[in-house]
Image (cartoon, rainbow, N blue to C red; front, side, top):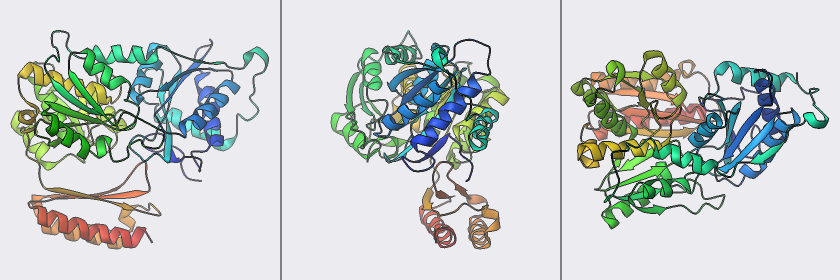
Length: 451
């Protein structure tokens, strides 16, 4: 059995290891046990989920496990992941559990854990939970009688979160007169998003807001913006925003129907903060996946870009270490520490709108701050994940591409932290060269690791 926790919690196909009801029960028990190590009092854990059909099964199992350890459960139902982080702090709970597989297809699911502070659980506590499960050390810890935990629903959790998001938008500004299209990906933002932007004054059109348990992320949301781009152009809207299944990512679409990556958003927001004297250490944080054009633009704007490994937890770690208040990933996962402890797609969209309103610029103008270097990425399904440096043919393919690129591009080959997949990315001076080199490396990866 491999490591249970990946870069963003536990994830897999629902009802297969590790995303079984039995494992969810054990995760609930172990998490509750760790929480009870804090000062003596009645303990509570928040549980929220996205819109996947398997969420019912896993929610019930987690609840049973937590209550069996003498800890109470607060159920908030479908809510964006960052909303659960907020409610955990707001309710002064000991932890928050999110049942979601983010941007993955509906048949997958996952569990991620927030600490009482609203930040994702530290590695040390994740390791302790994993050890408690694998060792069976707590199988005989079973409170009885009135020491067994209780579960109850928090009916106003979504309302609290909506107010929290709205408060991240400058009070002096309004969205009056703006026409906005939202793609909620049939996911966790389907209730909150239309309310937030409408109440701030915008004319809102929402698409993919009818979740049925199996249509989450299906040809919609932050990874599939074709419907959003078409709707923005059809309606002559000022801007469009697409969210992923659990609402922690956002991809923007400008008034011309052009998709902007997280790189564009990060750069525009960082420049606005710098101009306002609110960019500590003149620093923003990105990842190794950021486009070459991003770094060129950052240098022109006089903003330092710290580079973290892929994963929002690593972006956050570097932000805290180096005193940055803004960071993000090309995928649209943005962290605004002045507003929240974790990435929040709704808050990210509101910050973009604040920049548009305060600057008087259209989103296409903000997007023109950087020119995108030709880039191609191929995701290769793999059966195993050996250290890539130990696979000679893959290394040879990478070195051959790097030699051809010289200093005009780069190669990045890495495994997904949440899926059985190897990501092959190449950036180069022309699209033809970029496509050719990416295809060549991906073919070798497939030959060596997919068989």
